[in-house]
Length: 240
Image (cartoon, rainbow, N blue to C red; front, side, top):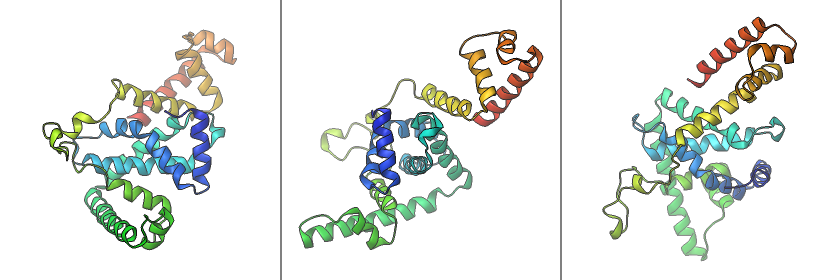
């Protein structure tokens, strides 16, 4: 895992158009992407399609992230990644997007092979992007998609892997669901106005009573009760 400072350094570079920085962020956040994807398996969309969507969400999070937010990048990224998948599943565009990406990925691979044979070296990302008329970040994403398994239940390509499905070899955390829920909760809390964020912090992270919080904030206990109730209701609706 990257440190916060390393992550911010890569993000700053990625925003300046550094494709290697984007690739590094995608690579080092692979476990996070898989953790989020796991929650949407079994709903009619294959793992590779979900992973591609998660990658797109991460790239959008990279562009939108601001260090001044005062939250970890992963906290900011999780809702955006999940949102990208939810939006896709809601619009039911899986077949069209999947076929388009896979088709372009095959053409890119053919171009890379032909170029390598002709010039004795592979083309740069910039050359690939120019050849296909896309942004460099999009070219990286499409090429990465071609290396994803078609199905998590597909057998390995080597003889000694025949008895194992890809699902068995995917690295996973024991508390994936808990991790995602905590990150989403942190993001929701970070988005609250300062006074409301302080109320939630004192009530749920300092275990203070409503009366004690009211004294700190300088309002009545009844007001604290109403504010807390409203925040909790809004968070439940937002987090589903």
